Length: 422
Image: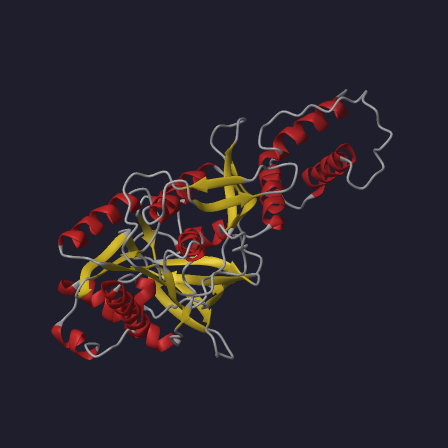
């Protein structure tokens, strides 16, 4: 009876508290198959008991089970993870717009911890970190095999504390160490709203958080009052965020009922879900150009892919990051504090294109090298926050030209001229 009890407890732990009782009297004719749950649980239980009894240091069952859960989820993919109580609480801070850290968004590319994009006016940005930089060590600890949650926890911390990153940039033969002092990171989701040429408005979305759509609508109404006839929507360096917000942003420019994105999981397990435009505020007639680059990921790619597929916008810039997997957060019923973040599906654009590890290609490619893009970022930050920069700093970057933005503006001007002649 004891063995039967232990087997039941282990199964419950591994599925996050959903009690699946294994009856010892059940048919065991297939227990020798390699994928039989009962046999594999017995192996896990055996190893658990051996570690508990013989390991050089005392470990509680709670520690061992938590370690097993973390290892199991991490072995699936970089985005799946077991979240203990503290990690689960921290995850909820990710979309609130403020946290202590260095101001970079990270992801996994080819199994390596990689900078998706730095946030302007943050310690990471000022240290020179750029999209595509590989983080090979954090405070001298190698990042090979690290989970995304572990990496985030190591990078975040109280204001004023330093962290040393070993960075390998494109073209480098050896990594270099960069010391960064943590600060409180505030991330406004919509920035830079302005008219940049007669009839052409500009707005930049930095992330898809809870207030993003409302902030975007406020910006569009402001630009409309100033005579906006066309729009540049800048998604460069936007690492994504909430699926709901990306859908609401995309539906702002699409007809009601238009397919925006679909999610598709394992056949026979997860249903295909289609998300269509349902909002009330619409900007259907203005020409739109969307700026993307290698730092545009996830929710940004959903918006860009939907507008491109429906020929509602022209994409200008560089191929996006290619983060198109869907993570579901499943709270534990056993302790009420922990959770499992599990990859359950992939995103597909309206034309059935897979985003994950592929990205979205621009209609009009305009390549910016690492240094050119950094200068554009600095100049853009100066325009958006003029009070934060000294006059001599502004003078140094006053002549910087954003070629991607320039091509988008030229394109929109041509469309406006053509439509006025019709």
